[in-house]
Image 1: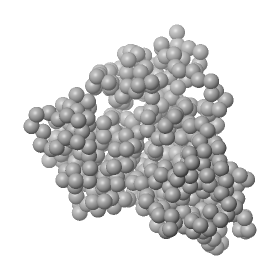
Image 2: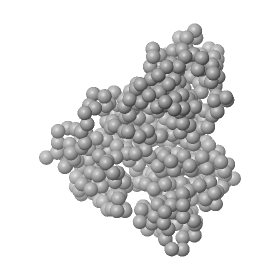
Image 3: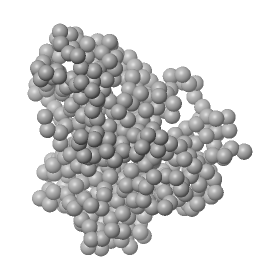
Image 4: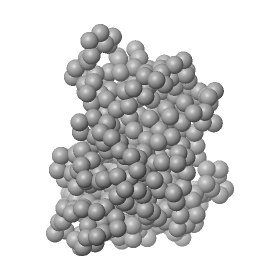
Length: 263
Length: 199
């Protein structure tokens, strides 16, 4: 039987795990916070130095582990926002109500403090510069983080496939990376924003949740056969992925990453 | 003073022995999928087992129900670190599909509508340890959670419980499925924390 979702950047057959890191290479490593700023009132961008961490591919994630004085630990997965193989790992973490790990990362971790990280993880929701197909990125809320890794990697490696970003966010104060995206926007990267609650004055598109109509209007058409990366909360990804199929995108060209609640 | 994460207190729970290493308790039911949700009608649904010699045994929806479903009450563990306790399902044991099928295989490749695959040792899905599940929490299983029917293998991380399952192919020897080719462990035992490649 054919296996459409298994097409793409797979390791060569015959050697089933070609490209896999060597056994023992994905282990907990120390990472030091070297820079941080609040990205919005509820989210913080962290820059971590982890010299032993293997080079990343854009779109991958890592696990963070926190340890209490009595040895109790808690771990969560976070997407990596820094470009491929960057010397510092960048995360942007949303503060979750009732969360356990995110309040520490957003409100307590100080410059010079160390945490543990493990990764990089994932070979599916990734973009590599050698991919020639046009790329449509669709992000909801903090789903922009792994997509930003792709945009930053793309910006560093011209000439490359055309990129378009459709970024859905509740309101301008909750946007990530505004100034950087404005600076990168050019022929090779087009950015469209959809605000679901309130938009800045003069915003050209209607305010409201993303739907098939707005995707058909603002995203790369199926005729260009883009690779589409969709990342955001589960209901967002459901709506977007269904809409993409409905307007004619091939399911095997659609790659999704869904955020469940992750405190 | 602690070397890592100074000042982290954490939120203890009293679920110690029920929670595999590195997991936390989740009350919702998050979704993790590589691509769009598949929509399959039960009147077009088929489940088959293909033996290592190529013999195919197939069931339609009613044929599956006629094998005799049972209730399953189990904890589930996702590789993204959440666990959910006391989930209730209805499904048909893989033992019932395999009854009367001759095989010397030691692994299976589960294949889903949409092409998702995942590999499992046969011994992990026999002996009352795996089901084709079609009800969750007393209601029909929603498409985004793998409905109309998914594989349910609670002893392994939940990516092994293939959504929209449509066949099991019996194999001599192991071979990686979709996530197993994309960075995740060939086996996936949460109690041994077998999450990723390179562990």
